[in-house]
Length: 281
Figure 1 (cartoon, rainbow, N blue to C red):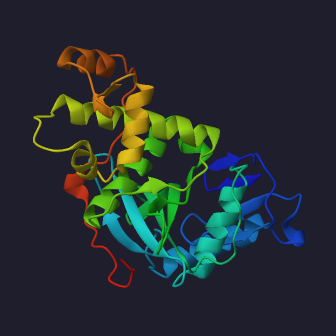
Figure 2 (cartoon, rainbow, N blue to C red; figure 1 turned 30 degrees about the horizontal axis):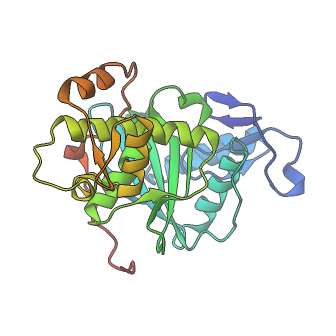
């Protein structure tokens, strides 16, 4: 089992923890992600960390929030914080079947989603809800390599919120992005739901001034993902050898109304991120 303060999580898959940690409960620190098999040592570590007055959050730069739901996103550099990022990957492997674990965190940035609260001593704390990672330099313009919502926060729209944030970062970079392929079955469902909603919202407000590629770019989406989504929605037709969107506003409104649970999106008013200057174009 994995113990995060008040949560006890049963792993879904095996992860390559050192042998001395096999077949035992692991106590993770909420803020440093250091782990131990001893509850006594875990309590001591937590007490010492709180006494140190170190920030009770991921060791990175805030790039979003706190929003109206007290959600924040933190950018953690795999080169600057290798231990934290390696432990995050180990933790993720317990709940992701398809994840290929790499102990070389340096080429990646990790974006940790947290819920802000106030501790029993009145100090601000952040609980880790999930994360996504992305390569610092991607030749294929991938804006997301891996994504995980921790089990205790699933079915709350956290996955699509992180997808939304990954595209908000792409927009700030003045780039278009797409998730690393192939997607898992769950990843396909999440992305299809997100792309469908965003594509329909773009068409709902479309005034004819932009091309489909330019329209997609306003949300950081690559045109290929939008085209495949519109095809899935039955909104593409071939006309004079070209693919065109064919739908009136009533069709679009009906498809939007049919979405029972719209994806949870970030509020761009709370973005506070500037792209790192050391990334290659």
